[in-house]
Image (cartoon, rainbow, N blue to C red):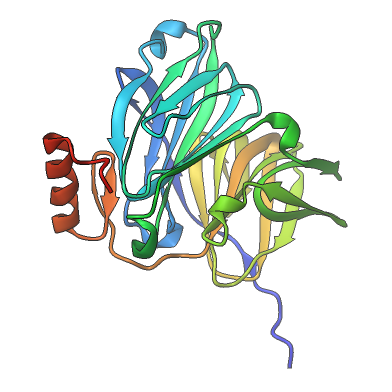
Length: 285
């Protein structure tokens, strides 16, 4: 007997809170370290300001270990440099992905011609088996991201397979798979998006424009909506429409211990990372 469809509905909404990071960059953050319902997503930051003084000091060189970063820009530009010898810039619609693995030191600074900035950085966990793997990096331009629009729904596929109506598209960032997938979803006023999702995944949407409608109320951006288990995802926009980052991921299900830019499985592994960074042996793996 076939199992009937079970629609995923929003079970919680976590507002993003203003804070600063780097050298005083103004951001809005949803911190999710160790929250099982959003595993493997660890953190979502939104960087948005028309004033260069809010972000001009950027994120000077700093270390990471045991996690991945994904930066998605809607306006302005960010220049990346790292200890692997990579240098790249991402601009409107571009994506930058980095797996810190065993250790990397990088900087992220606004480009000289950036007067206003709007973008996101997400942290994804790595399983224990990959935390000490070699670090990796990749840039993806906006022209490489497939998109589709139909029935008041527009979607840009970043990672994973997504569908809008009868159309299906594959995001180019395969490095996140099978842990997580991501899309940029825009809904017209009162529009609805429906897609099938594996029952084993965690599913969430970071709303950053307009509001989502659920449980007879409007959930205003910015904030993270977390969906219950099920095999069919339904997202509804309010009367003002909505835009969100849509995320699904297979949970890793391992302990998460975080200290600053390090995300490991045990306190001892964090202490090792700190000691290696102090002694100058952090990159020698």
